[in-house]
Image 1 (spheres, one colour):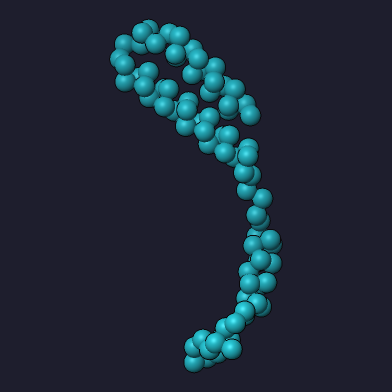
Image 2: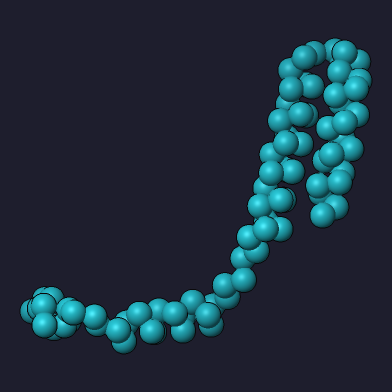
Length: 80
């Protein structure tokens, strides 16, 4: 959340003081970086990564135990 607030303040400052910088490229880079930080921080807030090792292992164990219509054998896959 702090990143979003700081990036928004920097973005607002650069937008209001746009002609102060010597080169337009510097302003464009700062604006682009702020927009990227805001976008990825917002995505991290809305979609947190809560999968740890144990939850992934449990999920894989369930998927491996469920054969569905296929039977896995040494020779290959057979449809039951």
